[in-house]
Amino acid sequence: MNKRSYKQKIILTGSLFGVLGFLPFTIYYYTTDDYAAALIEFYLAVAILSIFMYVWLTHRIKMMGVVLTVLFMGAACTMVYLKGPELIYWMYPASLGAFLSIHHRDASIANLLLAILTFPAIYTQFPTMEVLRIYTTLTMLSAFGYTFAIMTQKQRLQLSQLVERDALTGALNRRSLDKNMLIMINRKQQQPDWSASLIILDVDHFKDINDNYGHSSGDQILTRITQLIQSRIRASDQFYRYGGEEFVIIADNTSSKEAAAIAENIRKCVENSKLFEKRNITISLGVAELKPQFNASQWLSLADKALYEAKRQGRNRACVAKKGKLSIAA
Image (cartoon, rainbow, N blue to C red; front, top):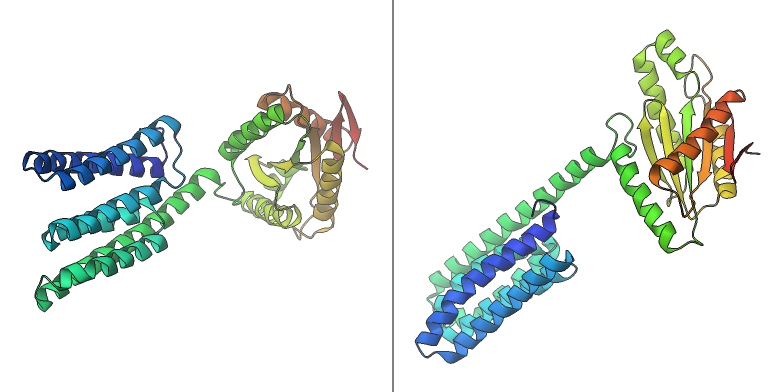
């Protein structure tokens, strides 16, 4: 379970508790000769167990939260009409479970529908004050579930930002780079005609900047470079801080020739921008296109060699690795 996503854990846990909740009542209704109720409970238990097994074996959760919510709420509504309004207690776990299983807006709509559908059965069987108590407590539970779902979503988003992004610049971090490079490599192996390129860039003379103007100035430059480059690259491109003053761009669906043009455009943009008032800031870049036989380290190594060549030839330039050769981008 530790390797499963948050949503998978919710679906699996909800399914397991659903099966454990319905089975005892299936047995009870069967032993009391209430075969209709026993059959409904049994089919619900089997359906929910099927969801559990599907998610457990495939790790897929698409629409499973919706199916689970429909089953729970359908069971609650059906039992209220079949066995009487004394079974309204099933509405409470169904209500809360919806906020855990599906989007909070959809869960709110589902809860409203449940309240409307069960109202005729409840209103005709209970005094007015009791009906008010039932729907007041159900509304309060929905409000708690809605608030919890929103807060949980925000916290998970914040945690995702902390895990995937560099704290200083806000660029994606090395962890994200490693993950997305593997995705690109797998895609290249499956689609040989598709292309992707890696652009690795380094701030020229960054150590001198830190030594002469202080690390706070260096941090400021890194942040400004990040903002500048992110505003210039395409929406499909991914920008990472590789470490120190080095950054990486994964250019999706881009050949080395196209990536060279992107790299040269970025180089000129940085050179012509007043990123630091005390001296001109330039960058060197290396470009390498992904090949089917490459692993992550080979792809990075080739781009790094192109970057080294750009520095060797005087810095403030972009170098492209092509068929084992290194050439300066025009």
